[in-house]
Length: 193
Ligand SMILES: [Zn+2]
Image 1: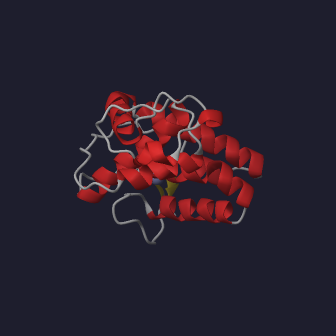
Image 2 (image 1 turned 90 degrees about the vertical axis):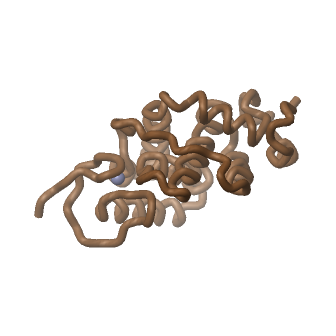
Image 3 (image 1 turned 45 degrees about the horizontal axis):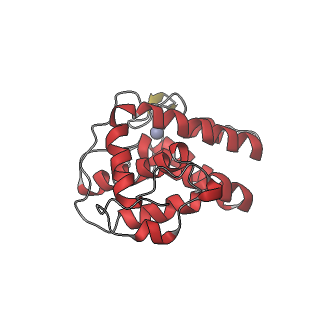
């Protein structure tokens, strides 16, 4: 059986038949591996709490697909979530609230032309992890590598996060923004105190 690169993340994986996602374009093997990784996280509440948010964000950002309405929104909101967590120090729960708020307005985002190189780690590295601690460590490294790969668009993504949350300056989880700051109307310039 021969190997080939995933159309999204570039991971060299076996050519297999199988389902793929509608717009997060990947090879069938990569989609299958991602499903296994998600199953591992669903089966381990602690792992789920710690890294599931950035697992989903990283996979979506590394498999941007083409400039459809769904892809434009998917790429935008998952990069916004990575920005919130990796740069603003937001909690996973807060990032999920930002995503929920972000998808509420149609046409809010523009297509971000994906970089040619989307990160040095892929979901297949997470899949090969041995045990919970290694899984967690690799997911975090993977997320960082994906976020760095999109650096040409960081300014746009930070602006989107600011307009949604008004809270990008909040530095850490101990003083994370509240839901009310997330749901305040965008563009009023109000910042979380
Ligand atoms: Zn892939």
